[in-house]
Length: 117
Image 1 (tube, rainbow, N blue to C red):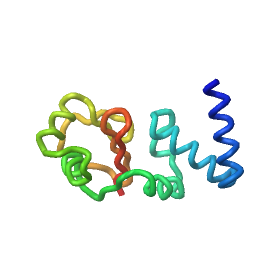
Image 2 (cartoon, rainbow, N blue to C red; image 1 turned 180 degrees about the horizontal axis):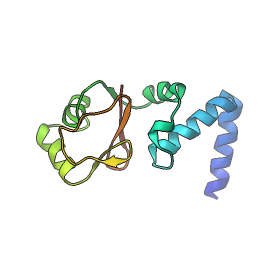
Image 3 (cartoon, one colour; image 1 turned 90 degrees about the vertical axis):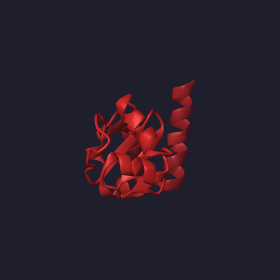
């Protein structure tokens, strides 16, 4: 049943937005949930992604988490890093002062994302 719903949604998206944009959306979704490396996203897909998730220009993990509002404090950010709940471009972060490459995708837990521009 789920694959039938997914197929119907893809067909609807293609009819409304066109095949190219549907492909872009599929690539972005695949990246967000770990099936495709972030580095494989095209520039136009990064632009689409920036319209859908929060963005930051912060230089390190701690600042990005706090400045974006994904966490409420430096202490919370440190605890999340220590508990392996933060990843950048699919790799677990081990220290809160880790420098963020530009562009990159920071992920908190399973469903909280931040695009570093």
